[in-house]
Length: 127
Image (cartoon, rainbow, N blue to C red):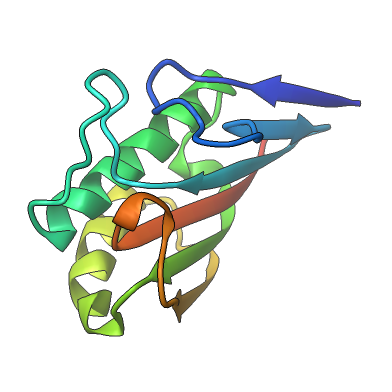
């Protein structure tokens, strides 16, 4: 049985999808972009600011499901420019301190929704 997870600490989905879906103890979090959940503003000042907002959005969804970054086992990062890789890694790693790093892939794509530069999705396993 699946359970839909919605968080007020993440921006509303921009299409027909949920923030996350819980199946058993597995949480599948949809790709998040650097959109502020309260103001709707895209946080595009620089890639670090944008990535930080993405991670905060993911953190809010995880919290809604009773999980944290410690529970994340897999991530996918989409970048419009792989030259941003190091800056994204720095912010990304700061949220996973002490969690042990999950499996991950990072790919460059030609375009992302809303003209953003980074989108991240995660899979987490609860206890």
